[in-house]
Structures are given as C-alpha cells and as structure tokens.
Amino acid sequence: MADFAATDQNFQEEVLKSQLPVLVDFWAPWCGPCKVVGPIVEELAKEYEGKIRVGKMNVDENPMVSGQFGIMSIPTLMVFKNGQPVKTTIGAQGKDTLKKMIDEALAAS
Amino acid sequence: MYDVIILGSGPAGLTAAIYTTRANLKTLVIAGLKWGGQLQLTSLVENFPGFPEGIQGPTLMENMRKQAEHHGAELVTEDFTKADFSRSAGLGKASKPFTVWVGEKEYTSRSVIIASGADARWLGVPGEKERIGRGVSSCATCDANFFKNKNVFIVGGGDSAMEEALVLANVANSVSIIHRRDSLRASEIMQKRAKENKKISFLFNSAITEVKGEGRVQSAIVKNCETGEEKEMPVDGIFVAIGHIPNTKLFEGIDLDEQGYIKVQNHYHTNVPGVFTAGDVHDRSYRQAITAAGFGAAAALEAERWLSLNGEESGFVAN
Image 1 (cartoon, rainbow over the protein chains, first blue to last red):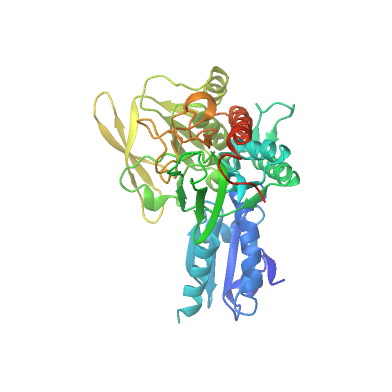
Image 2: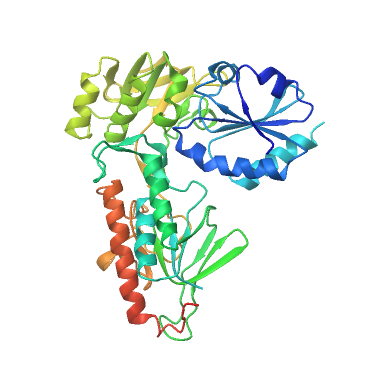
C-alpha cells in the first residue's frame, strides 16, 4: 500500500523532499471523525497509486510538524507539492471533495 | 426495494436498524458521511447503561454499527441528497414507494424512519465561519489537544458546554465559560464539576459578537448583555456549545414545528403514513444517546407493525 506513517523525524525526507505530491492525513486514535475519514483516505491511496503518496500523521506523537503547519482541528488533510502545502481541508470530507482537492493539486503547476 | 430505509446512523438510526433487521425486514441505512452522529464527537460516555466504567462515544457507535450489520443491515456511508415521500394515492396499489437519493443513486422502500439527528449550532457572528478549524470548534474532544497551555472560551450553559470546559481544562491554561444568561441550565453534577475546577471561570450575561485574528483565532469581542458594553479579549480558541439544529431541510411534505423539528403524531409516526421518526430530529426534550436509542427501537416496532398491517395493500412485496 502507498500508505506510510509520517512522523516529525521523517517528514522532511518523506513529504517535503518527495518527488510525488503527498497527501497527509493528520489524525489521532481518539478522534471519531478521523475514523470516518480513515477508510476514505485508504481508498484514495489505492486509486492514486503512482500519482500521489499518502502519509498518515498521528498528531499526538508528532506535535512538531502539526504545530508548524498550524493544525488546530482534526481530521485535517493537506496536499504537499514540491515541499509546500498547496491544498487543505479541515473536518470530515466526502470522497468526491477529496478527489477534487487531489486532482486540483495535481493539475496545478 | 427495501422494507425500510433508515436515514441517519446515530443511536436512533442504528438501534432502529437492529430492530428492523431482526424482524426480518430488508433494511438500508443511509448512514451519511459522518456516520455515527454526534457521539463521534464525544469522549467518555458515562450514562449509557451497561457500561459501568463508561464507554468511548466513537467505540459505542462502532459497536452499534457492527451489531446492525451483523443482523443484515446494509449501510451507505454517504449523505442522502433528496427524498420523495409523496404517495399520491395513499396506501392503495397505485401508490409509489418512498424514494431516497444519494447523488445519482436511487433507493426505494415501503417505509422510512427519519433519524437524521441534529448538527451543532454556530454563533453566526462575523469572523467565526472562516476560523472553524482554526481556533473555532464545536468539538473539544477532537481539538482540545491543540490548545495545550492556551486560553480558551466556551460558549454555552448546558451539559455539553460543561463537558467541553472540563475536557479543555485538562490541557488548556485557562477556560472561560461565556453564557448569555445569569445561570446555567446544565445538570447539577456537571455544574458542580465545572465550578470546582480551578482552571474554569465564568462570564455570565455575556456573548461573543465577533471573532478576530490573523489566519486563526486571536481575540474575540465580548459583549455584556446587561450594560451593552463591548470589549476585545485575547483568546486562542473558541468552543461553541449552544445547542443543535435538527437536520430536516430535505424533507418535503413532512410536517415540522416552528423550530424545524419533525412533528410526531401518535407513537413516532410523522404526518405521512409509513414515514416514522426517531431521535434528535424530533426530540427537543431529552436528546440523550439512550433516549435516542429508545426512540429508534420504538419507531422500528411501529414501522414493523405498520408494514404488517399495510404492506400487502401497498402493492410492494420485499424481494
């Protein structure tokens, strides 16, 4: 699976320096809405395999990156491209909304 | 064609599904994207019987979902977009089934249980909407950890406001409860817990009239409702717990009361024969997980009875 666990330690290497765009799912195990979004993110990881990488970041265990990008609510999903956050959604979103976000991020030069 | 379509997947909807499936009724639950309802936004639920140590809200909903699916309920985890409850010819053979749409997909049934619940009400003041998720929140259990050693406001005076305050008091530097009246309507035990917590203070007769800040919440204008005096107060987070709005926008032909709740006829029937209702979408009095579950069971039993009395007459037989 294209999924990987993003952490404070590997964020630079796996997300910011990634050749492919990366969708990062900021989540935590105690968060109900994150459980709603989790399976959708897994599906997207499969559907976009080869086009985008998908990382899941546990905000409890990785406060540095979460703080750096101003995460104040979860689930938050961010698309990183060339080391920059280019798209963000906050709260549980439908698959169509997330696909649109990814497609737009991929299309942008 | 289903025997029952259940709209909603909180305690009301999923309990109804457990009952209808066990009564051998072919059941579809349009669970919604945010399946599980409001309990997904809670932490420890201490007043649901059967769990002496309490149970996490999201776990309780996962269990209810599993139980409903175990008995054969089908679940769609998308939002319904349209519903047609008109049965022009009443119960006669010429009448058409109830139809519910999820985008382009169409589902039909012989009966419907509306258990679509309620959503958090926001303040509706300038600066609030664009800062939801950037300091403005309706879910302390989801977002509290982002406010470690920060100063936060809770708006509201009910049990959920006290709960949010207590959750935040575990991590935040200070918690102020802002309430427009001079007394709380929260239960005694919740008031006591909040008042005994050293981090929690109260601002009575007060209301937030504007939310401000660069990219996130940095301050709020707080108005004293008695004197009309307004002042800007620095704050990092604003948690809104001022009640809920029933999700009834999409139900054409269903009678609502003046506040938008579904009007209940005798025993959880709506004004349309064959359409029943359960939970926070009609209940403005109790709004508890356990009462919602009870309403769900009652509505399911009513639907079962109604189908057995009227099912064949309606000309629709389950496949």
